[in-house]
Length: 111
Length: 117
Image 1 (tube, chains in turn green, brown):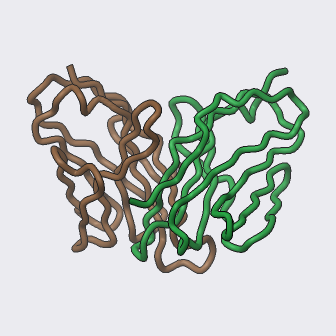
Image 2 (cartoon, helix red, strand yellow):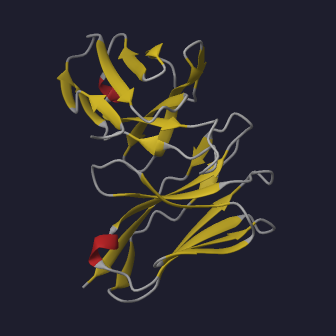
């Protein structure tokens, strides 16, 4: 059974600080990794995708991938109250382009 | 206009009733998915379709059926609703033929909140 694990939180971070969200996965052959943001009662929206080891930056967001250790992280710099949401990690499943989803980490940014 | 739409957005029904949730997309994507989301459990895949003639069961398909009426439309039916099917249901799409985002990238509709009494 392929699994994606996330700490459910909540993770509380002061406004302006760096929020660090982590995700581990079980399938060593996974190639594509995704971070989605989901506000309460709303649908998931894609923040970033990453498929090479190392860092990928997009504005205040940085995704980090370490395939040897099987984890992927999301850093949010200069955290804002509007970043308060649940962050879902998703990992490529089998060859049918399915995604395996973590249960999400709830992030709270305190003003 | 939204690229992926779902109707209805909210639905209350009674145990034993048959209901249908509908999903339409204008993204031109070939693949469509139905998920349910329960608090603390994340997204669970019910059914997915790679094209009109290719429909597959997900991890929790029991009690559900689907129909892919056209490339742009994918409906989910609950044959005889039961209270533990109360959940938030999402439709999603992905594009296996594109050259931009990774092919696994999924785009979600706004969701349907279903309550079964």
